[in-house]
Amino acid sequence: MLPTENRLRRREDFATAVRRGRRAGRPTLVVHLRSGATDPHAPGESAPPTRAGFVVSKAVGGAVVRNRVKRRLRHLMRERLAVLPPGSLVVVRALPDAGDADHAQLARDLDAALQRLLGGGAR
Image 1 (cartoon, rainbow, N blue to C red):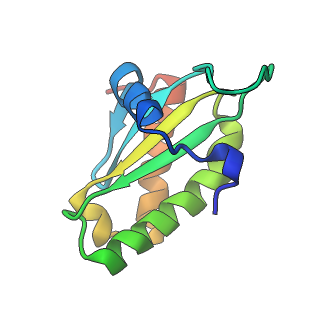
Image 2: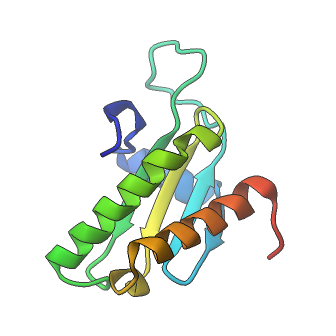
């Protein structure tokens, strides 16, 4: 589970990350990253925390499958928060193939997408 301060909850924050951030797609997911975005709602913090949110639609599968994908993605993202710049907004959107993917495949795709966004990898 992600700590409370690292959860992306507001619709406006999701929209900011998706519309103004960079995007990297993989077979099972798409990652949107808005680097170093300041949080206008934070009470004067010098380094706002990185926040992540997840979008898992019904195209991924039924409720059980969607919740399993969300749990896996939350667990994977929690381990990777330290490599992201402070104040970043991250939205991970699961694609229909994520419902059939195992934990290792989701981890590989998430790592590849983040590496591309942070390291400027080849398209």
